[in-house]
Image 1 (cartoon, one colour):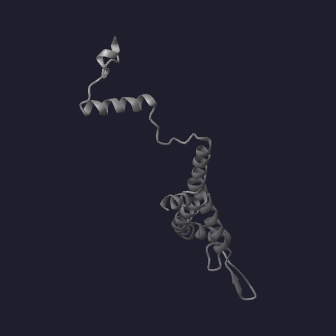
Image 2 (cartoon, one colour; image 1 turned 45 degrees about the vertical axis):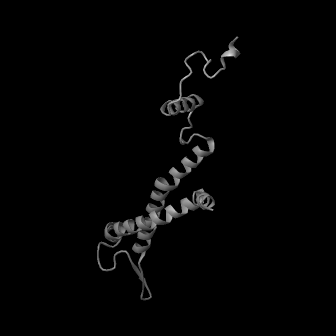
Image 3 (cartoon, one colour; image 1 turned 180 degrees about the vertical axis):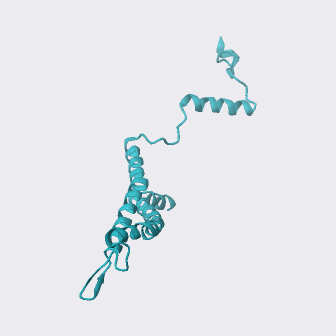
Amino acid sequence: MLKGFKDFLLRGNVVDLAVAVVIGAAFTAVVTAFTSAFLKPLIQLATGGGGQLAGTFTVNGVVFDYASFINAVITFVITAAVIYFLVVLPLKIVAERRKRGEEAGPAEPTDVELLTEIRDLLREQGRPRRDDGGTAGRIPHQDR
């Protein structure tokens, strides 16, 4: 049951989505604060001289705040770029490596390493080594 749950969680789409949502939400707050504090005032200075109507225009008494729209577009582009380059692209590269078998996983011990480990464990248990050319454990009359 846990293996199935683990397989579900480690499926690429679920992990990508969860990471993107969490990091995206946190990073969006930072980018929004930056664009509101620095970029929106610059847009207002560049388009209206910094006056009361800077970054807006009025039609029939209705105020259109285009500086806020430009600010939101910049926030979206910065957030999307950071999420893509810092989250999605690295996960995509890891997934491709796993498909090709290049991802470094836990190294499997070789046969020689396993046999050496078994030999060492047997020595620790006090069993005799076979240094007599392979005749240990034979019945003497079989050697005739």
